[in-house]
Image (cartoon, rainbow, N blue to C red; front, top):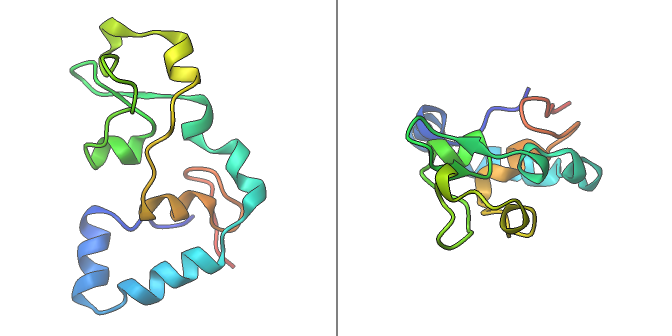
Length: 108
């Protein structure tokens, strides 16, 4: 399982001076075949207040879906969500490394 470079793990990587090394490993381990199976491609994450996120990790980072006016479950519109652009960041390499897919990525 790949550790996501967010929150406490990110802080530890930065403090220990290993952030660049870890990110390089994730980038080098990018697996294009893993992209179609990513959580953000077929599901949404809903927080306790009803706000929508592309995945659990974006929820932790307070990065809501990119659909204007439709960031809450009460405003849910299937077509808007299906056609949305997924918000991405460096943490996304954690889901595309090795075997890929959120919580299933692995580095050899």
